[in-house]
Length: 408
Image 1 (cartoon, one colour):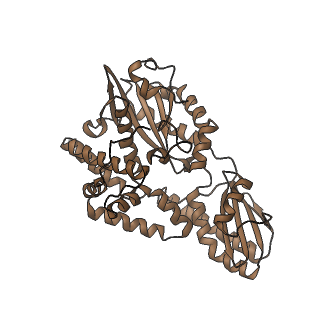
Image 2 (cartoon, one colour):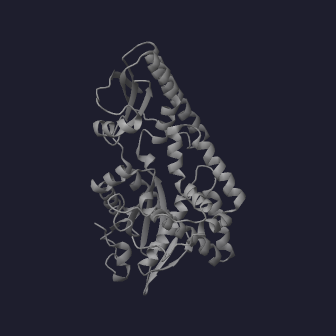
Image 3 (spheres, rainbow, N blue to C red):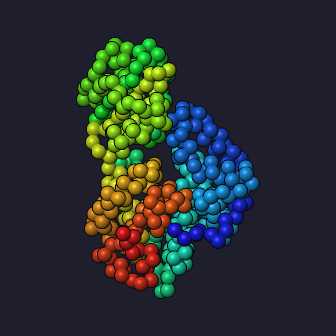
């Protein structure tokens, strides 16, 4: 994608932290550190979830030394945030401050805010005048784009890939960390190489969706942990009911390095991209857990469902509308697969035929890879996927073409 700034300001991360409030920033970093300490696998996922926050803090501590494309990109977006806050009228500054405060609380991250900033920067590079109508005017959409005498509304929205998975990655990491000490003890008494295959027809979810659901999900994790332990302690090779299928077999992958780093690529090739994998070692013993849901993941369908919610709620219908979808909680392999297998394209084009898309002239999709300035083939070549709605009256307007022409 085009550079967001001719040269990112190395002091921008520090200015951004000052904008957020140093006390609030320090409290957020302390909370992230506490979450990271929960376990090695869950901690790695937390570091990825809060990668923007951690990168900005690293840049602050290294006094703005920008060492790569991602550093440049994040510094440029931090600078955009500071500049925008200074340009907004008092009401707009209040909305911006509220949005920034919310992004640094609870389970939220800075990714949605930085997606908004990056989307605005991207449209400016394409020749559009960009007005932050959501912040400045309280409009339901985020950006008002102008080019020549044509205007378009743009709404930024976020959807987690977890919404398309029955087995949430976050829940899997918590289970693997939780059961790891027990598996090490069991391996010490039963040295060998083992593979525990599990099918979870009802799924396995994280506990971040609210107090009631959260407790139910935590209980499900505890129950699964207990059942795996019971099966191993009673020397059973299998267990099955409507909610769970467990089978313990010898691990037949030979000549692989006996740790998670060495085994994981081979396990991934063996079990496919949707499997949830974990490796525990003790001495020469190796214990692999491989889990699947009762049905295939459908991340693209979850994205479509989110589009159907956002379009009628956020676009007024008085101008051509653009949905800028940000797909969270997806990794390089999954993101490439969603694009290469045309899953996102298929679901988006299905959405564009429905009544909810009546005001939508185009949909764009991006992930953290595009947000972080990662290049192709891992990221979309033009900084986003774009899908034009050929049935919209404004679809062929030359003034809108840079923002709406399909990217493939």
